[in-house]
Image 1 (cartoon, rainbow, N blue to C red):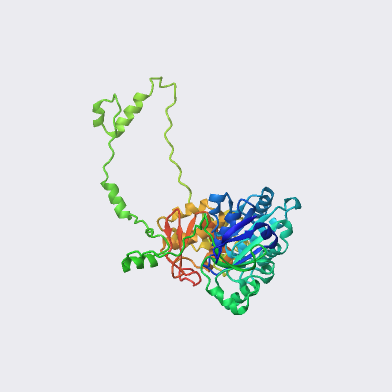
Image 2: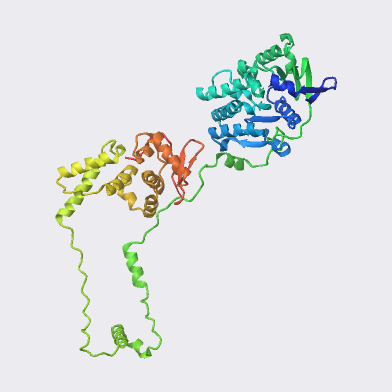
Length: 534
């Protein structure tokens, strides 16, 4: 079966044999803007009804094929590596044409996911070795000539998959069609396995010379690749022509969702409006928390004295004259009228109410024990690195010090000790605990997981005092650890759960917003030590 790629310089149709292509593979090269993706789209559209197709799309350019040719779009970002392997096996078993979109992944994950998918296509059982075109755009990402910033494991997985596709895929029915912007960036063992070539516009000498070598053109004629128009390619190979020919690629029915570079009029804005758009704060400008102003003792007593005394409401059927009686007499008569007429000797008189005994004042020994506990806790938590130790070791040390001071028994159980430790790690002072609104923060912290409580109270303390956001080291101390990385992971979990929101200003400073309270810290550096922690 032959498809029409476009027209030659003489106006004759340029054919490509699909049968030959399945046996000999294809390499497409062209700089950005040369029409490389347009060529792949034309080839896919013309052969869509003749052979199964698998498109590995790192930029999301070919998802529109699903609208016309019923390709199934696979968003790799919503799948795991194992899921990609399973989908690849089912793709070959069912012979469904698919487009694997990798645009929502970073480069390393693109390589791992593409490698897992291609290897699963390759490792299928023999009974499913049916013909399929495997189109890989931006192949230099998956088969780089040199190691980059990605891990060696990801690079090896991806390179192995591309090598298997181009070197051994023919026996398994897989015809590799790879496209690249730079031949110099593509691994040579992958590019050398192609027998068909379509070379587009390029400007670098090394790429022009490699293109000329692959096409069998004299290197002195390599300058021709600079003069090629967009959408025109020089082709050679068993599926195209035995001699190099120039092909102008034909029209396509689908288009990329990405918008092209088109001139648009600039919006009309004043300099102040433009400056506001560029330099506005990242964190939401919610109102700052201001402590509520409480009423003083004298003002409270004065307001109570000015309030009118409540007037008792008379019940239905009561004599109007009862309103003129004193309040004590009225209540006595009402209680007497409500009692049934009985013999005075039948029931004993109601006992007079006993006064409630006041709680005895604490004994001097109890007062001394409490003072001793506070002194032990203060001395223990003030030692350098104490708040980073485990709870069990700190509690054992606490009990040992209590025994030295002759504080009998378990004067403070481990549950209350843990709460005091959380407050010490968070740096909560008595002055902070007395601020209006702080009980609300404590109530929210009590509902959180124990791992989040200290950090939440630490952030709330900074927000209620309008202090800068804690540094990484301060956050680690509030979490009871010496590892800022572990503490920042805990902060990220709080953000994922919606407990806090984290923003980074243009100058790199961090702002944390407590979601439920709508308190926000002031912008603060992540590394510099702040003066408000002791």
